[in-house]
Amino acid sequence: MPLPILPRLALLLSLLLPTAAPALERVATFGDNPGDLTMLLYRPEGHDGALPLVVALHGCTMSADSFDDETGLTALADAQGLLLLFPEQNDDNQPHKCFRWYDERDNRPGDGESASIHSMIASLLDSGAADPEQVFVMGLSAGGAMSAALLANYPDLFAGGAIVAGLPYDCNRQRSSWDGWWYSLRWSRMNPYLDGADASYACGVKSWFPTVDRAPRDWAGYVTEKLDSDLLAALEADPALWPRVSIWQGDADETVDPGNLEELADQWTAVQGLDPEAPDAEDTIAGATRKRYLDAQGVVRVETWDLPTLPHAVPVDEDSAPACGIAEGAYMNEGEICAVREIARFWGLL
Image (cartoon, rainbow, N blue to C red):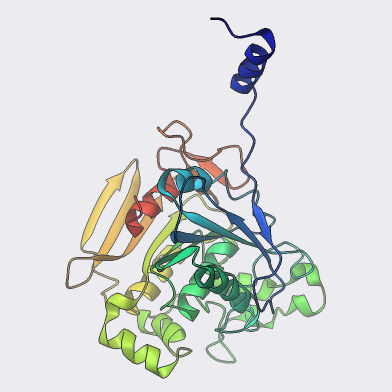
C-alpha cells in the first residue's frame, strides 16, 4: 500500500538533506575547574554501562563541534560504543583557543587546564559512565601537545594516547641560560595574542624553526621527574603500566616541524625502557611509514605514523566503508587512512 503524500515527502527529504551533526551535551558542573575549560560529551545511543572513554582535544582556532564529526570520532563512537569527552578551550584563556600545553601553570599534575581535564574524567568515572580500565586521550596540534602533557601528568589514568601533529612534553624547557635565543622572546607578557610564542619557537611549531633535538633520556626525565615517587616506582617495576602511544605527523606540515615525530618517539619509547633507535617492525600503509616498538612480551607500546603528503591535519577517509570524517572540515585532510580508526585499532577498541 503506497505511503500517503506527506510521509513520502518526509522520507524523500530525509534522504536528500544532509544528516545533522550529533549534538554534544554540555556538562556545567564536574568538580574543580582551575583551568576554566568547558566540558562537552557525546554519548552513543544504544550502549549502556561503563563505556571506554576517549578524551579528544581540538587544535588552535577550533572548537569541540569542529572536532567531533569531522575527525570521524562520533561515527566510531556509535559503531563501537565509545563515550567521547571534548574539553573545550575559550578565548578568555587563550586568544587563539589553544590549550596551554606550554605553560607550567597548566601542564603540571594537579594544575590549571591539566587539573580541569582530570576533573572531567574523574566525574565520568565516579558516575559509572566510563570504564576506568579503558580511558584514552588524543589530540591535534595544541591538543596533541596537551595530550602529551596529560599522559605525562597522569600515566596511571590512561590506557593509551594519540598525538597528531603534536609536540613532546616540556619541549620549551630551557636547559641553560644560553640554550637558544628563542627563550628571550617573552612576547606574551606584552601582547596576549602572542601568548606562547616563545614556546612555539622553542619547540619548532613553525616548520622553518627547527625542533629542539634532545637525548631520549632527557625527554624521558621531563616526564618522570614530576611523578609521585610511589607511582614512579610502580611504573619502573612494570613498564607495561605506561599508556600505549600512537604518534602521527605529516611531512608536508608547515605549522609543526615534522622533526617532532622523532622527538616524540624518543620521549615515549625511552620512558618505557625501549630503544628509540631500533623499531621492532616497519611497514608501509597507503604511502605512510609505520614503525612499531614492542616490549618483551611482544606488545606494541609505541607506534609512529609518518605521512609524506599530509599537511597540518587529521587524516580522514570519506571514501572508506564506513566513511571516516569530513574532509572539508578545518584541519582535516582526505586520504586513504582513517586516523581515528587506526588509533582505535591500536588501542584495542575495534
